[in-house]
Length: 160
Image (cartoon, rainbow, N blue to C red; front, side):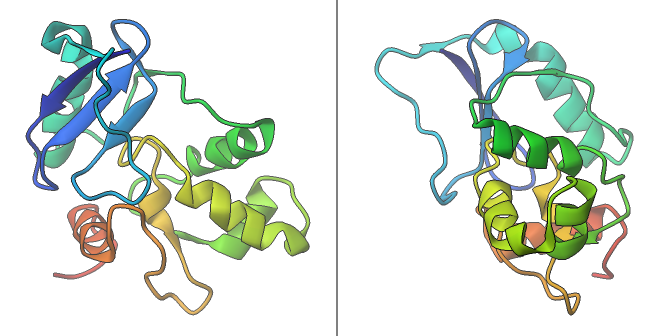
């Protein structure tokens, strides 16, 4: 696994992937169940130049959609939920129930969908921060609710 560390308004992002230009993980400091650098990993800042440029543009308000090669590890169920996450546009939110429906799953799957959202290994890029509780509350974010709020303010969903 290759990795780089890149500064952001959320803290230093740990960006990792199996090959140059291919991302498997984006982690923020203190993230619940987030990736950590392993002894066999190789730091390679040049390998993720496109990703760091896109993060900088996103946080500067110049990028609305990431365009990167992604290969996160996950079960077919999680991959299906993450694909539905990818369809939530900047400036919008979905409830867990609506995301469950968007993923083509029965309503009884909402807890499992929430678990898949919580296991998203690509914070910010795959917009799990855009998923909210049924009453509009900010619930569950592996990077912390403060970061979720900051991302939604940055995207114009919430007022500061």
